[in-house]
Amino acid sequence: MPIELGLPIRRTNIDDVRRVVARMSVDEVESKATPASEERSPANDPVVDEPSRWRVEAARALGLSGDELCAGTSTSLAMPAILDPAIETLDLAPRGPVVDLGGGLASTSDWLRRRTGREVVIVEPSAPSCEMAAEMFENVGVINGAAGVLPVRTSSVASVVLNGVASLIDDLKLALFEFERALIADGLVIITDVVATRTVGSFRSSKNVLRTLDEFAEQLAEAGFDVVETDTVAADRGWWSSVQHSVDEQIAANYADRPGFPMWDHDRRRMKYLVNAGIVTGGYVIARSPQQTARAIS
Ligand SMILES: C[S@@+](CC[C@H](N)C(=O)[O-])C[C@H]1O[C@@H](n2cnc3c(N)ncnc32)[C@H](O)[C@@H]1O
Image 1 (cartoon, rainbow, N blue to C red):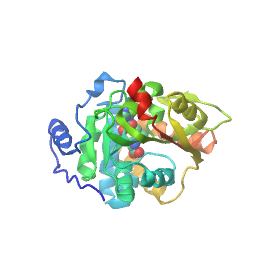
Image 2 (cartoon, rainbow, N blue to C red):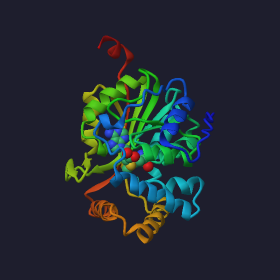
Image 3 (cartoon, protein in one colour):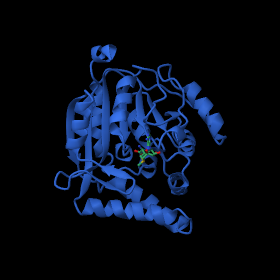
């Protein structure tokens, strides 16, 4: 049964947005919003925020809504198939709020919310993205924050989902430690991302740390998580990527003269090359949180 948050947000200033979304989010998710600047993150970085704004404007210009709006505002690979295992697992997982960490424009959150009936809240370091997400997807909760210090109470979250985000987190160990604090017993960490294939091994490319699935599984196991499932998912060439492509074309046609455009264009071409060359692919890891007893002792 979806919990309708009904955020009354339209165009407003970001401080108002932060206050309103914090008030409207569920009891279990308490806003002690981490100033994103305390952590290495792209918060308020024009290189990240400008392309997100172009994406929103392009999606609006194309008149996208519903599932197509989710696709058009998403930059993730292998969508939506990469989320199918997460949707199946969430069906059987303990009840409670799902945190979509690095939720960006809330596309993944809205997709998951409508397919699982779960309450989904994004925790996103970029304040402008929080504002745009709240405007576009009114039934998703929005909190400004980042991986290192989640703005939620201890043992309050049923699942933490990271779609296209783990590859932007350098210190995954630290983040896993924080997820353990936030999760309830048997809570889930669901990582869906671009992953390096076994043959090349983990490597760094630009701002991404491209890990193999084995490395993700090892780090989760070392942190005490029980790895339930892991697999690769081929980059999708279906309707979702067609909508993403239309939005990219719209951006290329309208924003090519903007200072951030060359870097945006370079990044998307680089990713396309890595996928086509078989160096990276889509992948997911689902893991269960350590037992409460272990947490109580530590
Ligand atoms: C590729 S986008 C993915 C957005 C969204 N998850 C989706 O599927 O559409 C990466 C997002 O991760 C966020 N991010 C980057 N570093 C982060 C961190 N340390 N903690 C949380 N989010 C982070 C960025 O602000 C951005 O919104």
